[in-house]
Length: 76
Image 1 (cartoon, rainbow, N blue to C red):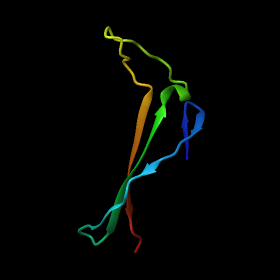
Image 2 (tube, rainbow, N blue to C red; image 1 turned 30 degrees about the vertical axis):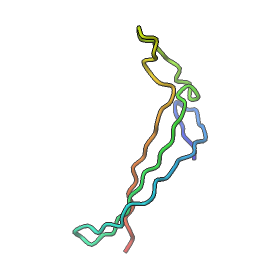
Image 3 (tube, rainbow, N blue to C red; image 1 turned 180 degrees about the vertical axis):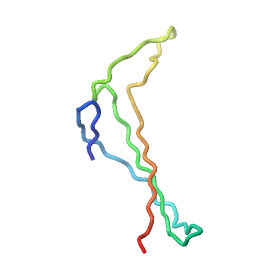
Image 4 (tube, helix red, strand yellow; image 1 turned 60 degrees about the horizontal axis):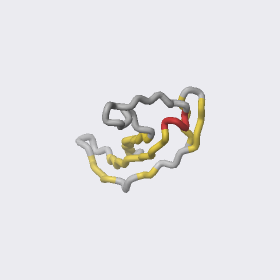
């Protein structure tokens, strides 16, 4: 897919976890759920601020994990 941040669009690949469910709720609706994740480098999107701690480690990592929790309901 495509990720747009500050008017800059990059291609990303999401990894979809196996579906969980199905689960039937108290109204008889059938649901399934999954999670889609990816990791991007924030500097690829122009976010390049950084600061070093006294230990030499960075305050902010370059890698940013994006996680989307998804739920689907079956049409009746």
